[in-house]
Image 1: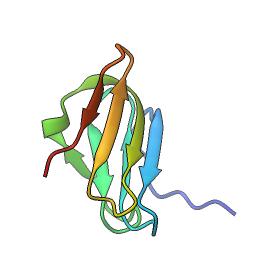
Image 2: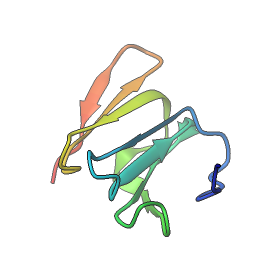
Image 3: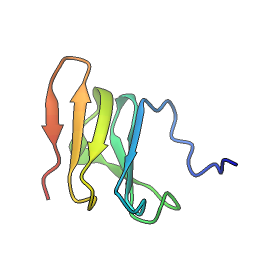
Image 4: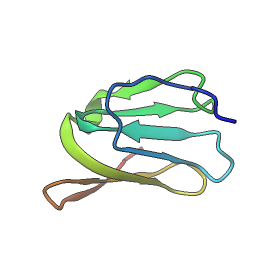
Length: 79
């Protein structure tokens, strides 16, 4: 069974913390969106910039997000 939790345009990547509480999603030429309540609500992270994002990964505790873009650069969230 699948439950729809978001409709955030074209998504390339979704990741979550080990317990599933924190979720991040992004897509091509988009900012990163995050949720701290298992996808119930989402916040656009404008400080991530609108880049050509390729993939996301998240630390087990959900405090760090790592993002790769199509140009081969890798970014780490701060704060």
